[in-house]
Length: 136
Image 1 (cartoon, helix red, strand yellow):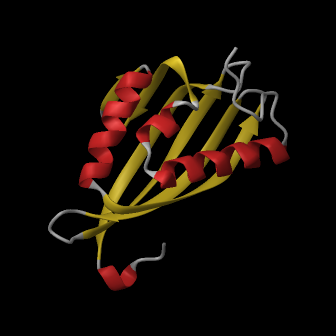
Image 2 (cartoon, rainbow, N blue to C red):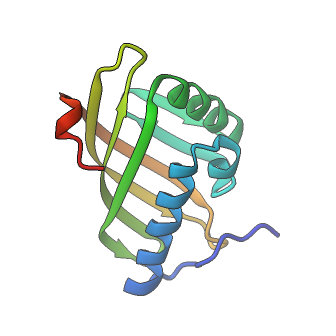
Image 3 (cartoon, rainbow, N blue to C red):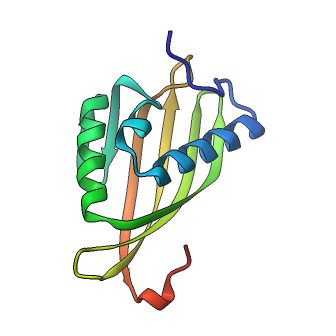
């Protein structure tokens, strides 16, 4: 049976740990590694894109990190209960033309009993920034 520690029911400590593990995985920019934190039939809404299943997660992230160069992410625990966690985040990247961006947003996560994320709903806004205004 697949498990991804820590498991629900979350405490402040385990929710914080889960957020840090997610941040570390996403900053690896390894779509396969990231996908293993999700259930095989995971459901995502990422902006206006709807994703179902690990294979679509891998495809989505592969394309994302081909476009979003020098990607760096920071996540922060916002709230938690039982098997749900809410985070706020920001990340920075530049495109192929060298334009830098900062993206801000919120995510709502729902986990199964094995600690795998079964639902991820992300609301994200992008802001063009100057390279010297980068924070991450």
